[in-house]
Image (tube, rainbow, N blue to C red; front, side, top):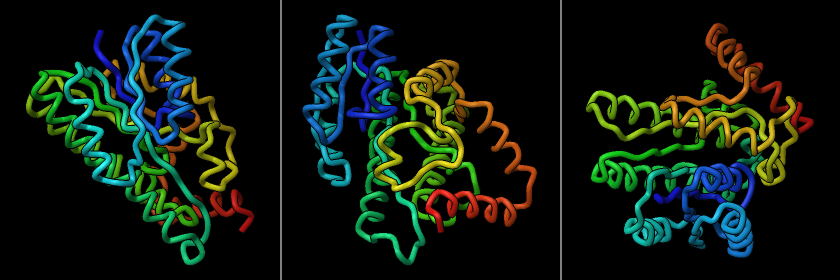
Amino acid sequence: MSYAVITGASSGIGKHFAAVCASQGYDLILIARRKEALEEIGKVLSERHGIEYKVLVADLSDMEEVKKTYEEIKSFDIDIFFNNAGLGDAGRFTETDLQKELFMIDVNIKALHAFTKYMLSYFKDRGEGYLLNVGSSAGLLPAGPFMATYYASKSYVVSLSRALAEELKQEGSRVYVGVLCPGPVNTEFNDVANVEFALPGISASDCAKAAYRGMKKRQTVIVPTATMKLARLGSRLLPEPLTVKITAHQQKKKKGL
């Protein structure tokens, strides 16, 4: 069986991507910084579904480790690659931590960009394959005051993914590129980003299942819930300055600013 590769696989949506793919018979390559968590996930899914798994420990803020990771996986028969690793932060831009923001940019943008470059070349040589980048509903909005760096990073992910999807379509390629844009999801992300969402989150399991279905249907932009689909439509109809103002209000509520 072919492999599914998941970055940020030790928790949250990444962990559930692994579960969905294992249930479909895919062998797994699990990538994150926490080896014990990866081993536990791989062991449970292997026993449950009879699949094989490989664990790779990597700090994806380091571009040398990103390159090394790709060199380790490129000899496998990979059918799916989930560019899932990422993090966020919230607060006034003048008060948030610069080093955390630069780390966020390294993981959310630079590592994702590099893996996208590597894996598109890999899939084009293979003749087919699925690459799903994990963005956010934040990336569908014009800006996100009080989560400025995170919103900007996810806008990059959405823009890049849409552009590549169109390039592939115009080439008549069988390679798929899409972007997952969920709203709030109940994961460790909330604690790392130091936020409490104003809207109720969906489960990481439901998000991963919706993403897998959308990917197999070759949807370019996957928005898992009806609420976020309506919010996306509303943001299109409103003037951008008003959308930004409303977004700022929601972010301030999260942080009590």
